[in-house]
Amino acid sequence: QVRLVESGGGLVQAGGSLRLSCAGSGRALSNRAMGWFRQAPGKEREFVGGIDWSGGSLHYADSAKGRFTISRDNAKNTVYLQMNSLEPEETAVYYCAARRRGSELAIARELYDYWGQGTQVTVSS
Image (tube, rainbow, N blue to C red; front, side):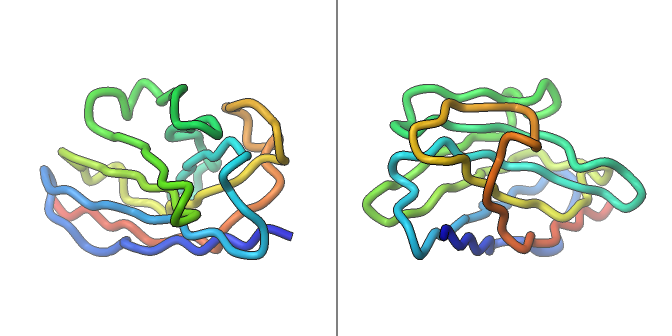
C-alpha cells in the first residue's frame, strides 16, 4: 500500500509562488510515475503535470507550462510541485497521485492508483 501526504499549500497573492510536497510512505515511490492534479469547487479534477519514475520525462498541462515545475527526490521518497505566477483561478485542492510500479507517466486520473488527501491552495486577487 502506498500512502501519500501533500503539504505546502496555503494562501498566496496573485503572482506569488508555492512549493507543494508529496511524501510517500508504505512503499517506495522511486519506481512509480507520479502526477499532480487539482480540483476547484464545482469542477472536475484535472491533470496539472506528471513525472516518470526517473525524473527524466515530464509532462505538463498547457496551463502549467512555463510556470510550474515538477521534480522528485527518490532518496526522500518525495515529489514536488513548484508553482510560480499563480492566478486566482488556480485556487483548488491539489492532489498528488502514484501509479503502479513500472507504469509510465499518464495524464488520465483513472490510471492512477494511489492518492493523497490533498492540500488547499488559495490565490487571492
